[in-house]
Image 1 (tube, rainbow, N blue to C red):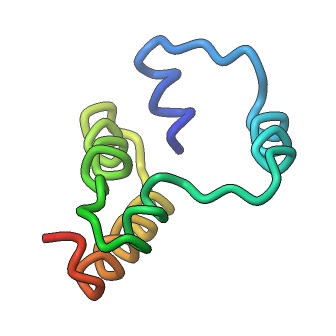
Image 2: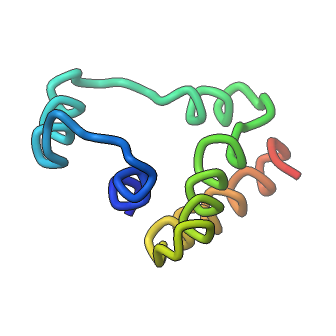
Image 3: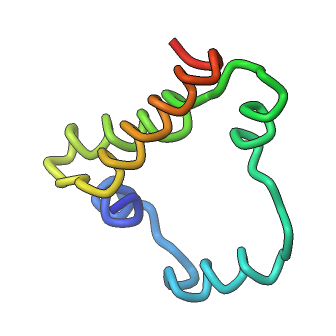
Length: 85
């Protein structure tokens, strides 16, 4: 969904999604900054990292069912930990 949105906005991707996922997996055990924030009880950048993609989806008339679900779950988890909202 995010790639589709970006392409509608003129972004060109030099590698496909599968290669991007493989590259991420090759990094090995890695914790994203948002996960680190959750573990440390710090404010999470949910709106900047996920909410913004949802918003761009709306602006480009791109359905974002997966992003919508992920966003709702991450917000809930952040609220439960006192790191969001």
